[in-house]
Length: 99
Image (tube, rainbow, N blue to C red; front, side, top):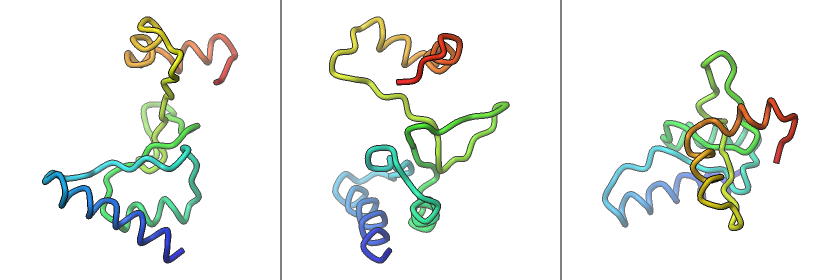
């Protein structure tokens, strides 16, 4: 827990010092997290975090488990545009597929 806290808070501090701007979002490594990780991210001062498999329901979302859409190396321009548009989660739902 101490190492995770050090890495989460330290990365924010290091990036802010190095690049001179506020870091407000955190991306969980591999998109995986535990409730402990979410609490450490909050404590470090991040405003939100991205997770694979995060969900929104009725327009509300857990700000520390926001859905992240992956862009793969083999994705073409058309797929990238659809993913960036926000339509991708709907297409996955109606097709019954999850990647």
